[in-house]
Length: 146
Ligand SMILES: [Cu+2]
Image 1 (cartoon, rainbow, N blue to C red):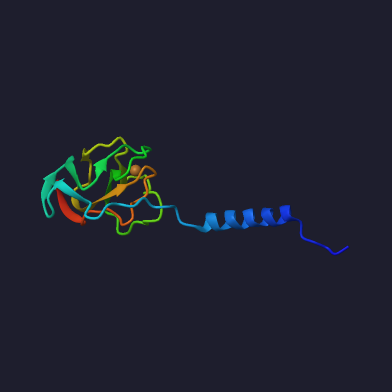
Image 2 (cartoon, rainbow, N blue to C red; image 1 turned 90 degrees about the vertical axis):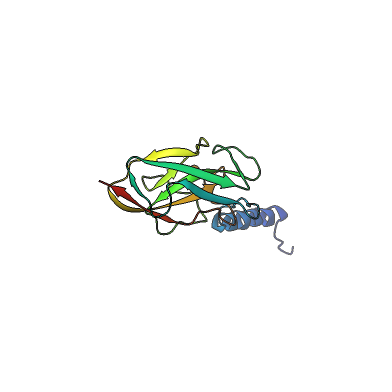
């Protein structure tokens, strides 16, 4: 009898291959609409402020939704403090320099050490992953007075 490859083994191999390539694939990013923008209403770029720093976050062209909510063209704010480079293909880290506002907050007060700091806003989808294209503010520089 001629040896044949069992069909179930072939299907099994294909499933393994598919699972392997899925693991290698990047986390899917949620599309953002053209023209969407996040920006600082407060503080202003170049401002010297007293701590705690009052931050007011603005968003246009999209809506604010809490993390975990699957609604089109929405996201939640993140403030990046003194962060040079963010990996756009992963969830925003959660630490002292990457602050999440996953309840949909648009205002906060930041306790920052006296001196110069950069702040940047990035919107994240329900999984905290930046949209595609990313909705990020320009980086602003502030000085926190003693
Ligand atoms: Cu988040």
